[in-house]
Structure formats: structure tokens, C-alpha cells
Image (cartoon, rainbow, N blue to C red):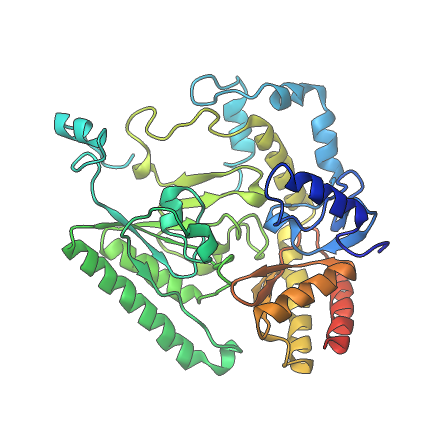
Length: 424
């Protein structure tokens, strides 16, 4: 570490950027050319162990040589400079590249539309725009566009001043820790939430706002790293099937390997998979998988100009090769165990600062007494060379890359132990 963070060069750039746009969310400016692996370098020359990885979106570390090699290969140049409108003019190799990337990890019953439906949809009226609803959970984060925002309930700043829909919102379980000491309490809490889900489905059906789908994160991330048991999600899937609701799983932050499996919902052991699953961040591109019955029955029903980016498929295919070649899923499970064990030890030593340690793989977190202490700990850690992130009201979350190893966990734990020992 050469300066405090943000340092003088970062502060000057923040000042310049703030003249162009609101830059108050910027932590510091980075030198990505010098950043490597798990280490992020800022423009003042500070080299920090990054346990946040661009809000959980860097899969295999900074400047990975396999990706650097990929972008330098002549046959890939066109994919990076000629971005096609994939919905109408895809390149010749598009199908093959999809198979190598998005399809290498592991028609809905529709009818034609009446004249009345086609006309009323143009003026936002039923029956063309049916009054269906999507059930979501308090504490969820699913996005910032209008429909996604209607299912987002993590921070008021995301939603304030924006019109929304009357859609059902169910409570998400608030588990007590350690889990083994509160097994009965947690079972009752999950049962309470599932009962409320069913009650809301029935209530909204009576209001003529049929619940068409249920959307849920395997771990509520922005809302505070809120977990539920595998059994909770299996029962939630059963409820969706029972009431004819589509079951949507949002793997934007949990997907890509950080929980020790490529998709976090693999831990649940579902007999009947999700109907729709969304992804982004570590997957290098955003999109969704769906069951065949949800395939649109006409062109342009799901459409935009780009519909993805072929260059991202190239990068993703190589990321998946690296994950397999370097056994990074098992690494995430093992390094995560080291990290979680160390956090539990810190909790035992400093219960006044750390509580509710929880995690799956490297997707770990803990609570602090309040947001003031949380923010202070994050700032101190940053100036000691460790980048952490907050979530929820008072949690600190860990989102390292898949090349985060045991020794990186030990390095962090040693630094954070010293921080807590001196914390006032």
C-alpha cells in the first residue's frame, strides 16, 4: 500500500468525473493493466486483495493469460470489432460458439391472438395486457428495469419515485445461526414463509391478478446474503407447480461456480428443474435458460438489437475451459471452507463485531452491529489492502474470484484479525 484509498490520483479523477455525472458511488479508480489474479491495483499504485471482484462478476481473476491469448488470436478479431444484431444477422459460427459456451454448462403451450388482444395490448389494456402478477420475496434484488424492479425489495433508493405494480411480496426466511443450534426454529420460520407464499397466490387469484410466476434467488445477495435451506427451495418449487406458477431462479450473482457448484440451485437436488433461470456477471454475458415449453411461438416476442455479444461467448467458452482444467469448482468449495472456518473463529473471538457467519463455497458473509461499524470496517480493510463489499442493512459479503485459493483466505483472515483486534 502506497497511499490511503482513495489516493490523490483517484480523488482528482473522481472530481473530474463528478463534473460529468454523479460519481458519489465511485470507490476509487483502477489500473486494470497492472491488476493480476486476485489482486486489484488502483491508479495510485495500491495493490489490494480483491474479495469483491467487481460485485461478483470476475470469474477467473484479472488479466488471466488464457483470456489475453484468446483476444490476440487473429480468428477472433472479427468477433470483437463487428458486433452483429444477432436476432436477424448472426455470424456463421454462432451456433457452434453457443454450444461451446452457454450450452456447455449444463414451446410453451400457446395459441394465436385474437383481434381484441392485439388491439388492446397497444393501449396497455386487458385482455391484450392481462393483469398477471409475479410473486417475489422481501429482500430480493432482480434488476432495475420496470418489471424487474417490481420484484426488487432490497433498498429504497432502487425504487423511490418509480411507478410499479401491485404484485405479491412474500417474506423470505430469516434464519438463526448457528444453524445446528436453531434447527427447529428455522424449520418453523421457513414453514411460515411457505405458508404465506400459498396464501398470497390464493389472495391474488381472488383479486383477478393471477400469479403467473415465482422468482427467487438461491441466496438473496443485495438484500443481505440471506440463505434458506435446500428443503425450503424444493417445497417452494412444489408450490409453484401445484398452483401452475412458473418457477424462476435468479442466478445472476450466485451462478458461475462461487458456491462450489456451477449453479447454486444444483445444491437443492430438484426433481423438477426451474422453468426459467437467469444468469450474468461471471458468465460474461446476460441471459436466461428456459424449458422448451417456454419457447416463444413467434419471432420478435423476445428481442432487442444485440441479443448478446459473440465476443462474450468466446470469452465464456475459455473461462469454462479454465474452470474445468484448473478444477475451480472444487477449489471454490475448499477455499470457501477455509474462509468460513476462519470467519467462525473470528466470530468466536470478536462476537461484539461479528455475528451470523454464513456461506456456501466462497459466497460468504457475516453481520456487524450496524451499518456505521460495517462501513468503517470496509474502509479500514481497504486501506490495509483488502477490498470487501457490503450488502443488506449491516452485512459484509465476500465475492472473490474462482482462483481465490486457501492462502488468499489465510492472508485475509490474518489482516482482518489485526483490524478487529485494534478496532474501536
